[in-house]
Length: 251
Image 1 (cartoon, rainbow, N blue to C red):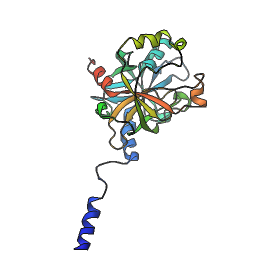
Image 2 (image 1 turned 45 degrees about the vertical axis):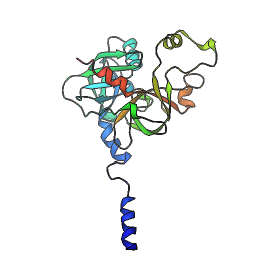
Image 3 (image 1 turned 90 degrees about the horizontal axis):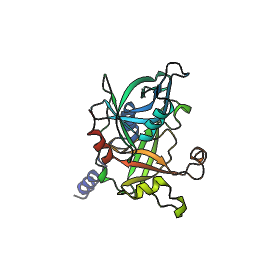
Image 4 (image 1 turned 60 degrees about the vertical axis):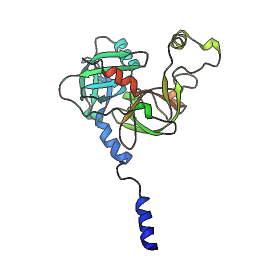
């Protein structure tokens, strides 16, 4: 009887078999993570990208950050905006239409034509709790490192208001004051290192691949160049509820 009870206890203590390893999840996620950039035939190189996006919905919707799209549109209006798929030297450009921009939540929705791409599923962002393990995949430093997917582990260190308090009133610029006059919304503060180019990376569960947010900014100590030389390790992500609202606006 003692032997039988021991065996039963061991069986019930086994970990659940439904969760995948991070390696398996990354392999599933990567085909859905794309570079967001532009194409100009007379430029060398003709293809260029400055941020990250990911495919969701029916495989023709791409979510990224609005500041990435705005920078592309401001740099040269004659360039074709779109996404880069593939890996390294096999990168291929697909033009896209900007169908919606949510500047308040730093989100943009692109729409592709043609064949759909593998899509990531959005999870319930309202279920995210402090201390929860996450991962995000994107293209830090953009063209500098090329179209090579990079994955970082992350921990949700806080659920915090989007407007961070300034050290003194003199640092409350027009943009911050405008945000304070609106209803503040909650963002995910992450214990993770992100870089320029990581904006638009999906923040997902490392066991299921469900997307709960989108990486959009880092806390920078000093000048913006220090985001590369001395990263703070504090990154922020917009919760998925705002992405779901934007997806409803697709044509």
